[in-house]
Length: 391
Image 1: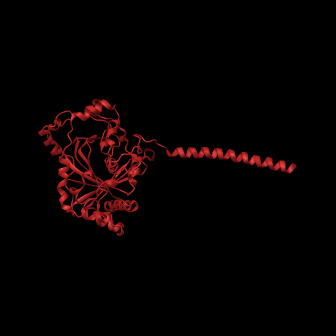
Image 2 (image 1 turned 135 degrees about the vertical axis):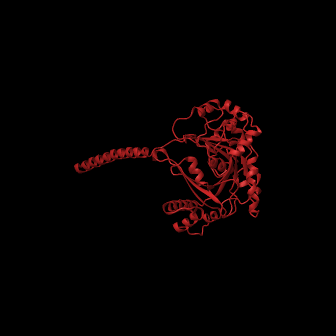
Image 3 (image 1 turned 30 degrees about the vertical axis):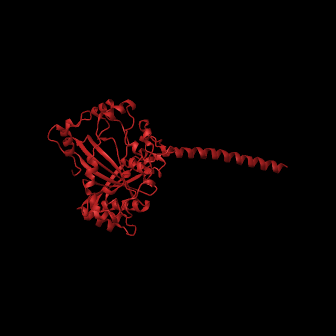
């Protein structure tokens, strides 16, 4: 429930299989294992972070705030996370950095009139953590980077994701870690009140601002490079389909902001879901929210949304087996993208990589041709001068 791994003392978890009907006992097991996770992602008015992330630009950043269970209040903690994407040619892995702060301090990050410095950042971090010396300074510098990104790009709440997650890992080794996300729900946060870091009361959100992803997401994290035979068998059987680089943020942002983007995530190209893009609408057509609602009224809405389970039945699995080959992308929530226009582009599954050395090679070629051209011009001028002198 705290977001940490839960150790099972028996093998009862083996009953939780994709091919079996979920019995009440299995559902109770799932309820004991799963933790509700909520994240609010931030982006600029023109979705600058979305554009960088979908293009997989070097250094593309993603800022979100996350909590487990019910929404924290007052002195309860939130987790601010900054994800930075790095390309392979940089020789650095993509990183995710996290710092925890109190809920009451979140609003100050979006206060344009407040002046931030290392001292102010340390005070916010220290109020939520017991840190000293280097650890405190490091966390404060990270918080300053986050606040600078908010200020520079004018970040505002963009999309909220809610789901139930269960994590599985051997207590003897960290070579394999599995996380299963179910009941994935995306909520439009573009109409949050000015200065707020999220919509205070999601119970009053317009129904058109909420979409349910009709599939679950299984994430496999390996310590080595070899894929376990169990995972290979699941892929071969069609029980799971490769969905590399799938992003809940990209999914939710594209769902409610089709009038602000030019490119959709690559999983929108699935022919199976092409008929589901019709009769949708853009973010400009969504109704505004009632910002005067009681902020405490939404504390119970999390369980209400997540408990309305999307069944993991075999219908979806069988359909995908017939229409997808091994290695194709995971079919998630494309039918919920709002306002899809035929002119919108689809991002390639694997973007074309242009290595930096390519630009240098082009420069060298240009310099060689320029040298040859200068030599011809010089010879021409000399010959012209000789002819003029002889005359």
